[in-house]
Length: 237
Image: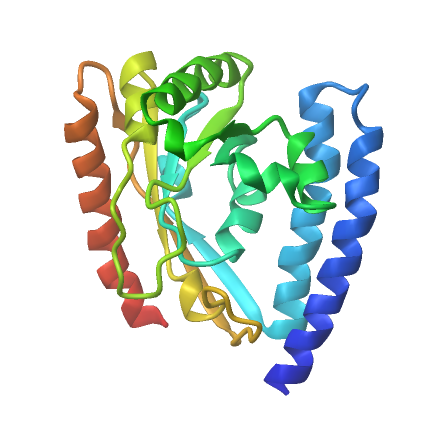
């Protein structure tokens, strides 16, 4: 049944992606917030399909930790689930992504209309400058900025190197940082066709004021909170 359910989910997700990529192109004349509301209907439907077809439910703890102003969200990266769910479970955000994702047919079209911060990781210091410049604009426009500091999906129990981009942005614009942990990889594994039913726990940590902090120190504080929380979440899987 897991194979059949996963196959049905994959077909429906693919069809939705094609349909919404076309819809996304027609949102071009609208404001950024209107585009966001329309395009992220895809996210809401996919999260719902994952629940009703694959049995992947979720709960969110720590919502009271979300600040009332746009913040930099730094999240654990285990699965495709959080890239789909976080934009609709948290306030509107611009996502820091690899530039190559915009070249993906259909998916990239929709992503481009969400005004992401698309960087070339190989550019190093220039990429950090781009994150600060564009991140400052997004925050001023009322959007948060979301970044996965590990840069790539890590299997449950694994810890990747935390890139400095999110902390660099927050410390340079004196933003609040919201750390996020979850155990989505236990049910929607990295690079896996099969989806396993279960309850994802998404945990939102207390906001950290980056004012006056060095990027390295801020990054270490975020990593410590996320990875400590991850140890707790593993027991829920």
